[in-house]
Length: 208
Image 1 (cartoon, one colour):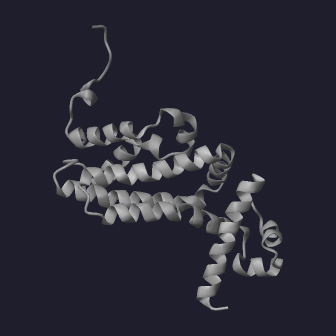
Image 2 (spheres, one colour; image 1 turned 45 degrees about the horizontal axis):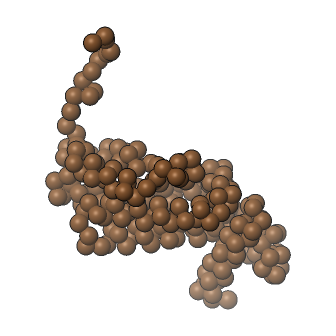
Image 3 (cartoon, one colour; image 1 turned 45 degrees about the vertical axis):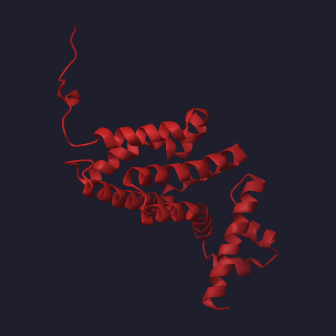
């Protein structure tokens, strides 16, 4: 088997593992995958030497469309404000569709992701990397004045967390709407900067 053939087989088995996970409502082991794929366990273990390798392949398959979305938005010639909106809106719509299609399966993937967070972290870091590039583009146009990229990244992530966190999506799905996301993005561009607007100048509370 060539390297290309091996990679195709790895992707095929990862997609099958996702399908079986959704059907069974539980994490798929290599033994289960071998049975479902009707191949020997030795064949599965040759492709996924460790159980964690199978989970890595499943996660890669799960996040692949997100990466495609982010890279497409980043490379587009959209105005920077629209880029920010599309960067979040397209992924949110995709996650919302997944959740509505099968809330129980969506919750299962959230549980698996939380339990194996270190294996998922790389994709979160990658999203932050792409966001940092968007922040740099925005700053080149005069937005987010005075903020270091890491600081802007943290602030923006906290402002849009409801549209990026699967757990928040499950809690607030009926309240999360694209027009609200657009207003958040507009507000961000209207005022996010390093300037002290007065809020943090308050040292204590006292009766009026």
